[in-house]
Image (cartoon, rainbow, N blue to C red; front, side, top):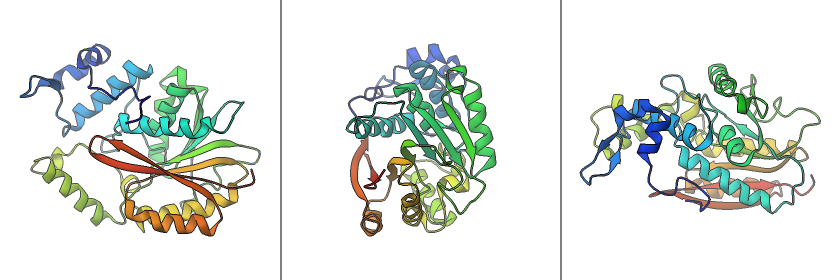
Length: 287
């Protein structure tokens, strides 16, 4: 985990329960005598997230609709810290602004980016219900309202078009793309996770997610190919384009597309426990 990530150590459940008393009903001692929660329980994970956001980031009111993606906050914060490292080499003098593609109902990237580094953020999403929930999360916290805007992308075939307006400039874009190619593939991945966690059925699974959050036609590789191709049209309005890449085997296809468009790019490795991921960052010569 990034050295600046405040979630590097174990959770302080006593402090977290003080911030969110609802968490207390889910905390128990494991066989090692350590306080924990059942991470396969969606209600427990939701209350943990509320506690983390309130205790560490002064976000007092946050929630998500039932069956929507509940993000692991330590991993999301890691992305933000790595982005900060990337931007620190740019000698930026003005207020940093970023755009989150696929903000989701949780709006977690804009929230963390603002609360950790004070960045101004725009979040976009193709799902109207996600947009409404994200707006509700921002409006419920007065310390976020001035710095975070949410826009609905009503053209499902576009990523940046219609969202980045004439005259606007963003120092970076951020994205956690849907990584499965179909619902069937997403269901198989869910089944594997259920088995690994020793659970009996999907009703016990802790990660939710609507279709557009988990899968899209062509999966992660095709989505990123589309994003890279469209990003070239906005090379004067965005500094660094970035995205998570969950499947390492997709990197050669991504590199090929970036080289084709003569983009400068780099891959940044990330790790959260035993899980390894990476983000790809690219930019074009002329700004």
